[in-house]
Image 1 (cartoon, rainbow, N blue to C red):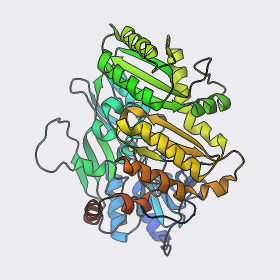
Image 2: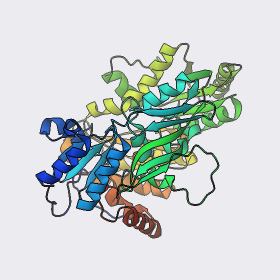
Image 3: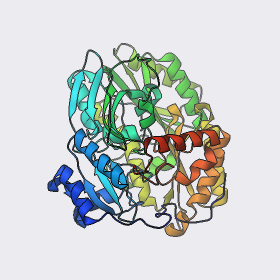
Length: 488
């Protein structure tokens, strides 16, 4: 991979800043949605101009909040005619700057949060049609009301939106069995760069009528079109869930435990989260509502959940596997949640880790994936490599062992200058990503490319693959108005 000189990873706009749209053009855009939903003051724009960690803070010429698909269409039609840059935005929970405007003030943010209707729920066909602005938790609750289950689940589910999770192809804690957002979508409604509306809201599991266009837009981060609605897959609601926390000696032991559970327990292993001791200490230290799950510390932990349509044998089966794993030395201690309150306490440990790591100082983050069997070797190699590079740094690898997605975060040494540490972001990334690629992995597992990793794609993508991506961008967005400077 190409070495990059030390610099801030949160790159400003590159090149000559374009001129902001003139007042008369902004007035034309505002007339599409109405003055109430065209935000122009700095105070009103501010929540849409920065991502939640403040790594990317931009400036928009205007924020538009359309309330219908037709309004989105009119916005893009005018933008395409006038070559005005558009930044699509959902719940603004992204972590790579894909939803954030640049600092130049020449772009218009189009927030999809007013497109928040659930148009239809079909429990017989196991589908839901939800607009792009529907909050993920709202979609989950709508499924529950008809005794169905929408399995996409992640920490930001109370604020991220359906359009956003599809545009970034979000993963989450249940991907081990249900897959990512891409796997949970049957059809899409998309507004193209020229304003045309593609109505692809098909509810079919079988449709062999040519190219499957929907997958072009999932994971494209709003660079090829704006998703305005989707047909989501629903599943039978699990009647029983058993949650357990286990202390283990190593990631290799966790991998062996996962194999034994998958092959022995009735039902599905729906979550399997790997956590180092350092992450537990961080959660317990900085979150007053979190408790250490065991009296004696262990080097590694696993938070797991098994689900089934019947309670028969589920808990007993998991308890038997954990007992056998204890006898084999794979597990040092384990606890099965006895109540919903205890289950929520277990999950709280996992959910607060990313937030509380900020209190340790600066951290250099990696959202990567490797083949599941390679996870232990990757963690060992990457941890040793970054510690050699920056003595005293504190690796915190955690995440979704079940699908090979590890968040390999590196906190600054305790006595280091945070700003100076962050200037080594590219250097640490290059080191970690080399190890990821040596294991046949990916430098972005579930967060996307956005602005943060755009410069890395030429180093990790096959030249033909990258050329195809650029060709698709030119074909679908010839004037380059959709989320410019992101992904490509």
